[in-house]
Image (cartoon, rainbow, N blue to C red):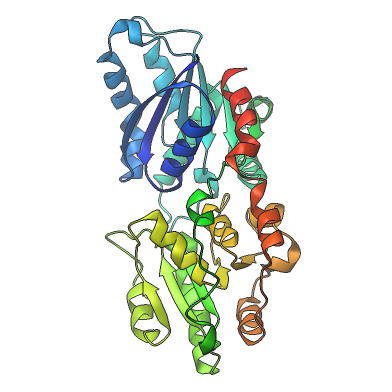
Length: 366
C-alpha cells in the first residue's frame, strides 16, 4: 500500500473537510502532521521548518513515504531542501501540492508590502512541487496570469519559462464532496415555515471581508425598506475580529432571523440548510465554493456572482452581474423558484468523492 504523508499547517474549514474526504475515498496508508487553522501568515513563513522537525522525530524506518501532500500554506521550496538532509527519507517521494487558493488572487483588505512575500511563497511552491492541482480553472488561470505579470519585472533575466513549467505539471481537480450529512436529513423543505409564505435565505460563509458580507446585508436592508418579506439564516466560521457589519445586521434584521451564528455539528448545519430556499454568495473571491454546493444539495436555489469560479460551475440563470443583486434578490423573494431535486442532484453529484477519487489516486501515485 502506498504511504502518504499529509502536511497541513491550516487544518480547519475546507482544508480539513477535503483531507477527511480524501482519506475515506482514496486507499493509502496516511500519516498526518497538522497545525490548527490560525495565523496563516506565520504558517506560510515557518511551517516547513516545523514539519521537518516533526519528521525528524519519527523512527528512521518510518520515513519512507511514497508521496507528500501539501497545501499552499507550506513553503515547499524550503521543505524540499530540508527533507534531503533527513536520514531514511525517500528521495524519490513525489511532492504534490493542492491549491485551495492562491495569494495572487486574494483580495487583501489592507494592501501592504509584505503581501509579495506570500505570493512569492506560492510561486516557489509551484516551482518546487512535482505536481500541482488546483480546485478550479479560475484558480489555475488567475495564478498563471499573475506570474506572467510578476515575471515582467525581471527585465534583465529573460527568458524565464516558469509559466510553462508550472502549467505542464498542473491540473484542475475539483475538491471531492461528501453529502452524507445533508442527504440523511429527512424532513421536507421549510416544513415548519410554509404557512408564513416568507422565503428563507441562507448565508453560510466565513465571517470575513473577502466573502462580501457588507454587500449581502445591505441588499437585505433594501428588502426591508421595500417591505419584501423574508427569513434569514446566517451560519459560518467567525473569528475574533469579525467585520462590524455582522453585529449591525443581527440588530437590524432581528425580526427576520431564524439563526445567526456558528453551528457546532454537521447535522445541525445540514438541518438549517434544508430549512432554506435560497443560498446567496456575495464573495469578492471564491476559488471553488464548497458551502454553496452544500446548500444546493439541500435544495437551496443558488444566487451567485457572474465571476470568480462560479461561471465554470453553474449555468447563467443562477448568476447575477455587477449591480444586479438587489434586483435578482427581490425577484426571487416576490416569486420564489423551487430548485427541483433532479436539478440539485445534477449540479452537485459530479463533485461527489465517488466520482473523482480515481483522478486523485492517479495524481498522487501514478
